[in-house]
Image 1 (cartoon, rainbow, N blue to C red):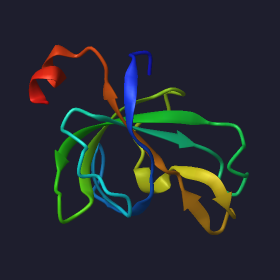
Image 2 (cartoon, rainbow, N blue to C red; image 1 turned 90 degrees about the vertical axis):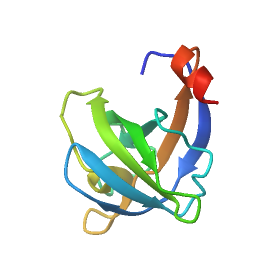
Image 3 (cartoon, one colour; image 1 turned 120 degrees about the horizontal axis):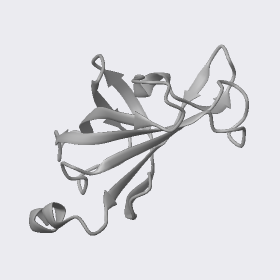
Image 4 (cartoon, rainbow, N blue to C red; image 1 turned 180 degrees about the horizontal axis):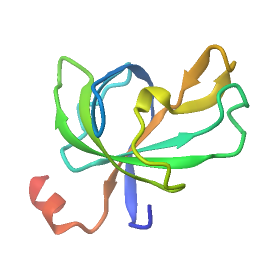
Length: 124
């Protein structure tokens, strides 16, 4: 993502994902109370079981379209793009490289807010 941003949550742990593309409901173990509509979710996709330091296959960008908190740490996100041009993919199928190929770990989510957006400034 080429736009300047600041990090809201550096590494949000995914609990579960439901829905089918391009919109997904994601439940987190991490508190998502401060996340706002319009924030971005960045997810680095690696090969399952290849190791968390392995090559990043693509970085996926989703936009937050709803925050179903504060009691639930649940966001609705919509696929926007990915750096390798692979197309829409469920966040449940984006792996961190940890675990094994038979039992892969879901990649953590970095949640960011775009800097300098006049629209976002009025939402704060």
